Every structure is written in C-alpha cells, then in structure tokens.
Image 1 (cartoon, one colour):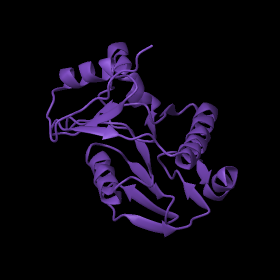
Image 2 (tube, rainbow, N blue to C red):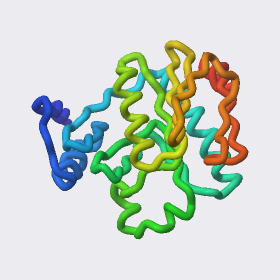
Image 3 (cartoon, one colour):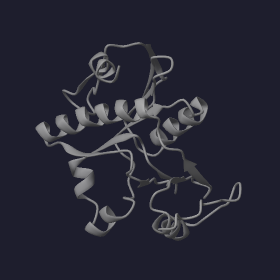
Image 4 (cartoon, rainbow, N blue to C red):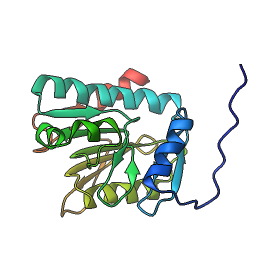
Length: 196
C-alpha cells in the first residue's frame, strides 16, 4: 500500500466552511481547525504523556456526565462551528442536554453549530501558550461559560469564566466544575500520578 503524500497548505490560506469540510474528508488522519477568518491550522499529534493526561481528564468528565445525565461530553477529535465562523476542537468539552437537544439531527452529524458550555485545553510542549489563551478567550466570546487551560510544563491552570478576570492557580490538587458542571471535581493530583 502506498502512503498518502503529506498535505501542504499555503500560509494564511483562507477556505470556506464547505472547502474545509472537503479538505477534512480527503485527509481524515490530519487534525485541522479553521479560524473565524477562514485560515487553516494544522494540529500536530499530542505527545504520549499529554495524550495520556488528556484521556484521563476526558474519562473523568465522561464518567461524571454519565452519572448525572446533564449533557453530552466530547473528546479532542470533535469539531464545533462557533458562532463567529471558526471551527474549533477543544481537548475536552461538554454541552448541556437542553442545548444539544435543540440542534437538529443533521446539525449533530457534522460540526455542530454550537460553542460548548465547558472547554478544556491542554498545553503540550509544542503549543504556543499565547495562542491557546486567545483560543480560550474566543470560546468565552462565543458562549462558553467555563474553561480550563492546563499547562503540564508549569503545573499551572488558568480558569476562564464569563465577565471575570482569568484566575491562575499553581499546582492545584483539584478543580471544581462550579455551577456549569455541578458536582464535578477533577482531582489533578490523582491524574498526574496515573501517568507518572
């Protein structure tokens, strides 16, 4: 079997929603996002440690969601079409049941035209932290109510909330889902022990 050639995208190429969907369909193994301006972002694979950490975090969110039945949880391969036109893929995310059920079955099949209520981004070694911070602000501007930016390199967590300053925590043992994810407590210490 012959390997597919790598995809090459001109710098600052702008594509429509339809073109973006077509690109993804012919390149299913390549993770991409699309900015509100139509620019493509190719996302490198996550390192092994970061991937394991992200899976642990997503598993905790999925278990909580299964127990409460309050919404729908998503992994890092899920794309959402935000109100500003961007198509983004948070590392982990969650949408309330009411908002998810308001979408048509057709909308749920593609990139759902919705911004998650909760988003989590994990900073990997190759990520630009300022780009991730801009992405977190974009989520809030488009309807997210709670976001966590976790930087494994510095053990720092930035908490994003609507109409509030970003709260920065150094090496917190736990994170609370607050009123967005009621009763959800993420034990970061337990997760870190799992992968180390």
